[in-house]
Length: 329
Image 1 (tube, rainbow, N blue to C red):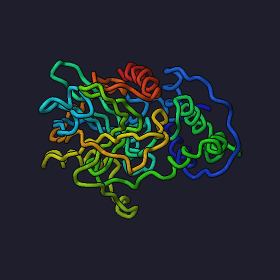
Image 2 (cartoon, rainbow, N blue to C red):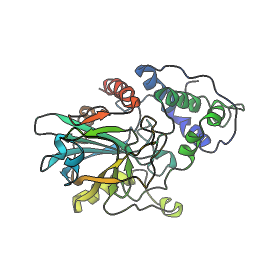
Image 3 (spheres, one colour):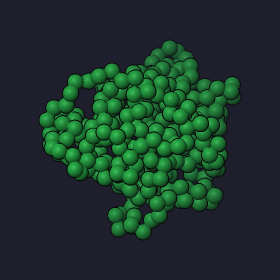
Image 4 (cartoon, helix red, strand yellow):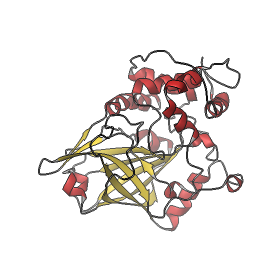
């Protein structure tokens, strides 16, 4: 059933409180175009907008690696003294007009592009929830289809109710997001897909990325949030950047035996070792014009020597992203 942005907020809100149901149909194989179409079916198709994380703001900064980074990977940006970076903070959904105060604008997104001296780039994409709602690309498409087929007036059991029975992690994802943050700068972000790091000696480790704000995480109460504007996050980060730089610590969380490498829906234990990869200092706004936004894209599998993908979802995501990029030109 086709959905439009005018009622998708109610549909997703309904999704966040569903608790029961029965089994859903068997998994199918999704093409990249079908994935993008599923996002449009859920959030609507909006001119010049990304299919997901449509509302965002671009910034510029510098990455300085930590001393431990080069011990676990030979990737260039962890060997250089410093690397210029372009970042984009964003709200969830493919609705460019979504209010920052809407609970469904969670999880927030963070994408970062390292601009290497060779002219090459490498990207990391993360969001503010430690984990993903499902294990595979096909299951994610099924979830999107279930959401767009369900709503306050849908007969029970809805498609989403059926989906949640066999995918309880998806229900947890939708119902346990963090409260509204005071700023994009005071929120932690997680790279939920796994990578294989290899150092100069040929030794390898599986890792997931974490971006931890130097100022710590800070959240708003519902009462405080009620007085904030629909664009308070971009307004706040613009003022913050004009006043002084702010920073994130970039960590690699190291997998241990038995950890799920190719299943992004299973977060690794907090007891896993964290290696400080470096510090990101953000000190300026980027090109936030329509053309500047169109030119900027991030690919989950845009990696460099010393880093390999370890989760098949990364390839699936990277095949879908260019379709969305082309649609918004």
